[in-house]
Image (cartoon, rainbow over all chains, first blue to last red; front, side, top):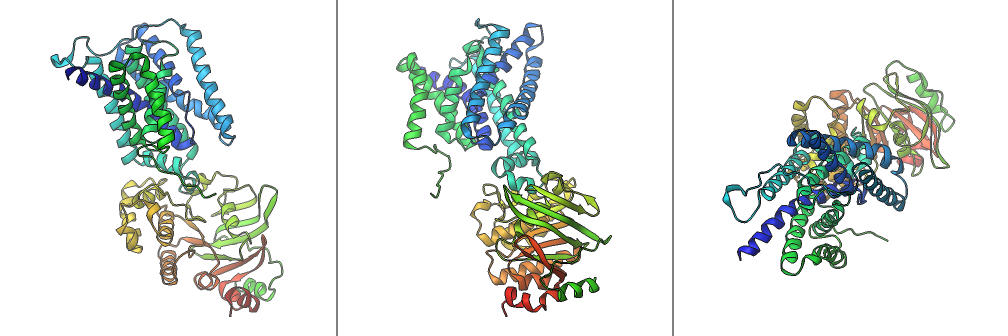
Length: 289
Length: 259
């Protein structure tokens, strides 16, 4: 029983990381109706920046803050320079651009930092907090950080005029322009926020999976499964989906076999698409033909 | 004004005289042309909205009325000269034109379906700096349209068509515009509500001196509200003058007013 509790709790810890990355995917999806396949690689790249900053002797939290801001700027730049020109291109063209971004970030990271696996520090103490036997300090700490990030995002989107304008711009760009919202900048801001969230997720997951250019591949898949499970157009659903996938993955890994961890994500993806394409909380889209 | 009016009215269906370049004009448009792809919809139109005045543009379906409003705030490719209070605004981005005080009640209402009624209203005030005034302005809109107040926390997509039309007008007013562009505000409303809406527009026009450019199919209502009118046919202004003169024109009466 204790063993199961332990697995569920650490599943929630990784689930939080999937949840925040799933939220980043949903944010881009709501504005573009496309999944940004490069989301994970952008997060990986940001984590390398944090690693490099720590290597030159910067304190962890300073490097953390610089990385988050840097990732935000990178996200805005990617939208403005690379995504904007293909805004009105056919869907397949945009998908190719996203895949190209994935490959480019992956290779640049490998080129600059090599493909050797590197350890990444955790900011939390090595011994368990409060003498508990269920969760490591890093698990508790990273879960706390993801929860704070999710809460801040909720407050930002729900209660600030800028957050409201961003939601409006994603939903209805034409009407948004008619009330004076600079829609282009709102989309760029969305990319910046998504990249910043990704960077935090990357830094939280790197101590457990180790730093290497392909570290986010599997994690993006879990996040995608979470987003689909909750509903790709529902931010709250995506967060819940991320947590569910995290727990599921951990429990299956412990009791059935570690080899099946990634399979769980794929089963969730296929299962949702077959049984309930709109996810648990997504809107069912009806189109008149 | 009156000399030009009688001239236009008597010249009915002939090309109108060039718009007088009055210093008082809030919106002044010259040679406005617009097209969707290769299809020309507006062929060099001249018109004006006086400061604090209401101008209506009448015309049948497909005459180019909606396009005309879209062209004024540069939502489509246009050429020609558009001046707001003497300043050129053609070529500016739509959001920049809105920031200069041009509110738009668009064709199809433009509701933010997944946001609440109140959020829709607050979005209308997005560009305003006087944040403290926005709450009271929302209340003012609720006073005009009590139905919206009842539904303030509801998703705007669940409103009826008429309620969404009220919301569209309120959202545009939240900008505290200098000029209000109204695209068929009576569309989908019950006759009684149309009457109320037009009375509210009249009151707002008088108390706040907001200039209005009103595009309508309901010619009788529009002419009763407006001080100036233009008649649009297949992308050309074929008649213009004071609303009174247009209303008494024989041909307008038969084709647009139906009596």
